[in-house]
Amino acid sequence: MKRFLIGSVIFSLFISEFSQAESLKLCALEEDQPRSSRQTETGVDIEFAKSIAKDLGQPLSIVWVPSRKKIVELEDSDLPLGRLIRGSCDLIGSVPGSEALGPFRSRINLSRPYYGMAFELVGPPKTPQSLKELRSTTVAVQLQTFSHLILQKLEIPLVTALTTKDAFRMIGMEKAEAALVWGPDLGPLGLKPLDGFKSPQALRWNAHFAMRKNDSRIKQISDYLGRKLHSGSAREILKRYGVPLHRPFETVSNVLSRATIDF
Picture: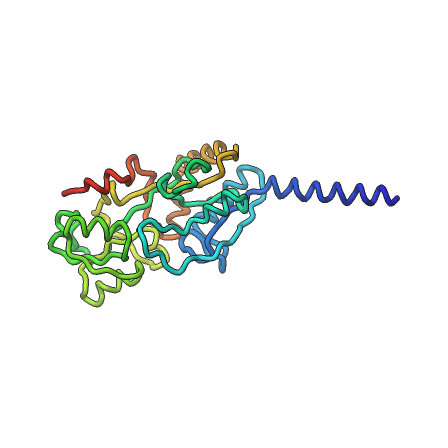
């Protein structure tokens, strides 16, 4: 009887470990709307990850990561890539390409892109619709973002703010006539970008899921994301969270496009 009980315990432990190995663990920031929110357990990446897990036939568990209050350098990132490499989770969403992987690039695979992300122009309807026309417009930008870098390079008049919300407030305070801000940030603020503005290559990226190099599920996930894009259901998720609707871009920001941007 004793031998039977010991065997049952060992079998239960084996099943528990097997179940954990076969689950899909998503690392998500606690407060990073519209990508993720621990308080409501909602967000763009939460919804995509749930649908991916369902397609894989595996349970999804969310590993919540404390959000950084402030990013002050262009090279800084709040992506929990170290946790992914250590195996704390299997998946990170909205990764803007291989440039964002830094020293972990050789150890991580990216899925096919599942939506496009860009800096968007917000302001009154009569706001100029191109970078060239903005040369006579004072534009608010978030400090130390690529929009700050590009407008500075093009010598477009600008004022800086600490957040997207503060940049938009500059318009109401008449310190700026428009704001060039990170598009996904507009959703939680209930703001819409100006339709006519087309973000240049230097200011647009594609969102990918990141996984460890040895995780074979990446192909199935990429195939699934392709079907989701084709069906239009990816667009519905973005729309629900107010994220500007962009299919993955054919060309995205890189060192060369940012160095050579011109009118």
